[in-house]
Amino acid sequence: MAELFLKLHPNKIYLQHFSKGVSFLGTVIKPYRIYIKNQTKGNFYKKIQYWNKLLADKQGKLDKEDCNQFLSSINSYLGILKHYITYKLRRKMLTQNLSLEFWKYFNYSNDYDKLILKNP
Image (cartoon, rainbow, N blue to C red):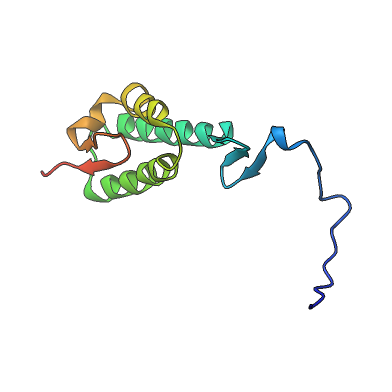
Protein backbone atom coordinates (compact mmCIF):
# COMPACT_ATOMS: atom_id res chain seq x y z
CA MET A 1 0.00 0.00 0.00
CA ALA A 2 1.36 3.45 -0.96
CA GLU A 3 1.76 6.11 1.68
CA LEU A 4 0.63 9.60 0.60
CA PHE A 5 2.40 11.66 3.28
CA LEU A 6 -0.60 13.99 3.64
CA LYS A 7 -0.92 16.26 6.64
CA LEU A 8 -4.04 18.00 7.95
CA HIS A 9 -3.57 21.62 8.85
CA PRO A 10 -4.46 21.92 12.56
CA ASN A 11 -6.38 25.20 12.08
CA LYS A 12 -8.28 24.12 8.98
CA ILE A 13 -10.26 21.17 10.25
CA TYR A 14 -13.54 21.32 12.08
CA LEU A 15 -15.15 18.22 13.52
CA GLN A 16 -18.84 18.31 14.31
CA HIS A 17 -21.74 15.90 14.66
CA PHE A 18 -22.92 14.39 11.37
CA SER A 19 -26.49 15.60 11.97
CA LYS A 20 -25.33 19.19 11.38
CA GLY A 21 -24.44 18.27 7.81
CA VAL A 22 -21.52 18.95 5.53
CA SER A 23 -21.28 22.06 3.37
CA PHE A 24 -20.49 21.13 -0.25
CA LEU A 25 -20.97 23.00 -3.55
CA GLY A 26 -23.70 25.39 -2.39
CA THR A 27 -25.58 22.75 -0.43
CA VAL A 28 -25.66 21.23 3.03
CA ILE A 29 -25.60 17.44 2.91
CA LYS A 30 -27.39 15.77 5.79
CA PRO A 31 -27.98 12.04 6.33
CA TYR A 32 -31.36 11.87 4.60
CA ARG A 33 -31.66 15.15 2.67
CA ILE A 34 -29.64 17.73 0.79
CA TYR A 35 -30.54 21.37 1.39
CA ILE A 36 -29.62 24.44 -0.63
CA LYS A 37 -27.48 26.80 1.45
CA ASN A 38 -29.01 30.12 2.40
CA GLN A 39 -25.99 31.78 0.80
CA THR A 40 -26.85 30.18 -2.56
CA LYS A 41 -30.46 31.35 -2.28
CA GLY A 42 -29.27 34.83 -1.35
CA ASN A 43 -26.88 35.01 -4.30
CA PHE A 44 -29.70 33.97 -6.65
CA TYR A 45 -31.97 36.66 -5.17
CA LYS A 46 -29.23 39.30 -5.51
CA LYS A 47 -28.68 38.33 -9.15
CA ILE A 48 -32.40 38.70 -9.86
CA GLN A 49 -32.39 42.12 -8.17
CA TYR A 50 -29.38 43.12 -10.28
CA TRP A 51 -31.23 42.20 -13.48
CA ASN A 52 -34.43 43.91 -12.32
CA LYS A 53 -32.46 47.13 -11.74
CA LEU A 54 -30.69 46.84 -15.09
CA LEU A 55 -33.99 46.38 -16.90
CA ALA A 56 -35.46 49.41 -15.09
CA ASP A 57 -32.41 51.50 -16.02
CA LYS A 58 -32.87 50.53 -19.67
CA GLN A 59 -36.60 51.43 -19.59
CA GLY A 60 -37.67 47.82 -20.12
CA LYS A 61 -35.61 47.23 -23.28
CA LEU A 62 -33.03 44.46 -23.54
CA ASP A 63 -30.74 43.89 -26.50
CA LYS A 64 -29.68 40.44 -27.72
CA GLU A 65 -26.47 40.40 -25.68
CA ASP A 66 -28.32 41.35 -22.48
CA CYS A 67 -30.85 38.58 -23.13
CA ASN A 68 -28.08 36.01 -23.59
CA GLN A 69 -26.26 37.13 -20.44
CA PHE A 70 -29.51 37.07 -18.47
CA LEU A 71 -30.34 33.56 -19.72
CA SER A 72 -26.86 32.29 -18.87
CA SER A 73 -26.94 33.77 -15.39
CA ILE A 74 -30.45 32.70 -14.36
CA ASN A 75 -30.31 29.28 -16.04
CA SER A 76 -27.06 28.61 -14.20
CA TYR A 77 -28.81 29.01 -10.84
CA LEU A 78 -31.86 27.09 -12.03
CA GLY A 79 -29.59 24.29 -13.25
CA ILE A 80 -28.04 23.92 -9.81
CA LEU A 81 -31.37 24.14 -8.01
CA LYS A 82 -33.17 21.58 -10.17
CA HIS A 83 -30.98 18.77 -8.79
CA TYR A 84 -32.53 19.19 -5.36
CA ILE A 85 -36.02 19.51 -3.89
CA THR A 86 -36.46 23.19 -4.80
CA TYR A 87 -39.58 23.42 -6.98
CA LYS A 88 -41.27 25.96 -4.69
CA LEU A 89 -38.10 28.03 -4.41
CA ARG A 90 -37.62 28.16 -8.19
CA ARG A 91 -41.28 29.06 -8.74
CA LYS A 92 -41.15 31.81 -6.12
CA MET A 93 -37.92 33.31 -7.46
CA LEU A 94 -39.24 33.46 -11.02
CA THR A 95 -42.84 34.46 -10.41
CA GLN A 96 -42.58 36.74 -7.37
CA ASN A 97 -39.10 38.27 -7.56
CA LEU A 98 -38.43 38.65 -11.28
CA SER A 99 -39.80 41.82 -12.86
CA LEU A 100 -42.90 41.40 -15.03
CA GLU A 101 -41.04 43.17 -17.86
CA PHE A 102 -38.88 40.07 -18.39
CA TRP A 103 -41.87 38.01 -19.51
CA LYS A 104 -41.96 40.03 -22.75
CA TYR A 105 -38.67 38.33 -23.63
CA PHE A 106 -38.73 34.95 -21.85
CA ASN A 107 -40.86 31.94 -20.96
CA TYR A 108 -40.18 29.34 -18.30
CA SER A 109 -40.46 25.57 -18.52
CA ASN A 110 -43.24 23.67 -16.74
CA ASP A 111 -41.00 22.78 -13.80
CA TYR A 112 -39.47 26.26 -13.51
CA ASP A 113 -36.09 24.68 -14.20
CA LYS A 114 -35.16 26.69 -17.32
CA LEU A 115 -35.88 30.03 -18.95
CA ILE A 116 -36.35 30.09 -22.70
CA LEU A 117 -35.98 33.09 -25.02
CA LYS A 118 -39.16 33.94 -26.88
CA ASN A 119 -38.94 34.28 -30.64
CA PRO A 120 -38.87 37.95 -31.67
